[in-house]
Length: 411
Ligand SMILES: Cc1cc2nc3c(=O)[nH]c(=O)nc-3n(C[C@H](O)[C@H](O)[C@H](O)COP(=O)(O)OP(=O)(O)OC[C@H]3O[C@@H](n4cnc5c(N)ncnc54)[C@H](O)[C@@H]3O)c2cc1C
Image (cartoon, rainbow, N blue to C red):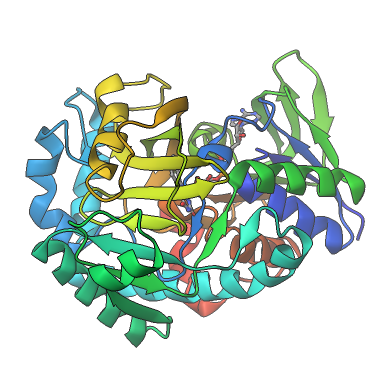
């Protein structure tokens, strides 16, 4: 059983998968080209939101053209000549159809319930990084309120625990809400994470449990022999052999998958965060509904995170889009615009066009696997992913409900 598994990528998906495989008796090596401090998995908003809808929805389709052309829109696609982007957008458009939306929502609902259950031991193990306090979706406008009503109905029907609060009720609990806030939907199943602490904890625990974690180790090539995975080659030429390969390299998984003879079309959806310092930070984590911004209080600092920009794989910081975060949040929360900025960051979400992750064996190889494409839900779906992928590596098929996420849909 002690077959060696090599994992490329030490983000949330790689670390949780490594942890699960170690627990099942495998020898595991995780290789990451960075130091684990700068990935999407550390800079994300930190809201674990069971029941979150996929990105392609019938509503997004209706607004897509306007949003694409508006650089102030939370979803922005700067025009660029790219055939792969065009193909991706056409597939995305198809995935916005109501029938696909119903199917993908059902898959993600089930997947996020599995993950939610599997977060319980982690919450106990690492209470500093994970607090099961829930979060609130906050509205300013009648359209925002309609959205909350719609979400309340959708989430309740799917078995999630939500509760509406009026603006006055919210302000009584927390005076930092502005007078413009008209209501909020509290999502009690939500967990609030400190992503940096969570990744640090998982990495330390992985090594303490006997896993090998190599940082600053960039995988340049994956070598096959007779169609099966044979070894990986690092940038300095070192080759490492393993019985099994698991690729969890976020948006960079597509490039590595090419060596495995499979094309996984994904677009990088850039998001930003700004850390601000506030004397009276809000008490509860929240999603500012109209602005699509997440607010996550972390001690006397607050992380404002959001925007979804399809501008390719790069780490260019567009100041105007970063500045949109505090400017928009100030309408919901007193004192945000005046708060001192501590730091700024951007990172890339790995997004498939059909709104579903990519999980399972790479066809024809027999010993290579992929777990990626989690878009806005990588933390939310991490523990469920680790179970499904470890089951696959143990030789079990994906359960029926998870089949739409199978890698083979791209074969
Ligand atoms: C602004 C923002 C806010 C978000 N908010 C949330 C949220 O509130 N809740 C939620 O659930 N999700 C959220 N997400 C999404 C979530 O962060 C991602 O889905 C998740 O981090 C993806 O994890 P991953 O492990 O697949 O990829 P990554 O975190 O990108 O990790 C991939 C790792 O692979 C390594 N790597 C890449 N190529 C190589 C190579 N060739 N060799 C070696 N190593 C390599 C990279 O260095 C990196 O560390 C947010 C994302 C952003 C950008």
